[in-house]
Length: 117
Image (cartoon, one colour):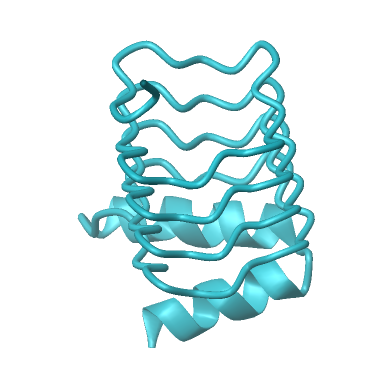
């Protein structure tokens, strides 16, 4: 149910409502949003709070993730090709086997990120 709500908000482009929903979940002691294997390609996700989100195998190809909070996110085998990650916080994120060809990581925070070799 939570995954469905998250996907609906993100696909609607209502990042403010998504971030508020995430904030309310955290107040209830719930962890990161589970978006493993979801198709979020081409979406405008600039400024989205995806802290500790599970995005393993997710399709984020050509998505706008400028300034998104992906701190501690699990992005193993995620498709981020052509995505705009300028100014995004990817610190402590797990990017092992993620596809990053053509992704713009200008000014992204990468401290502690795994899988960028």
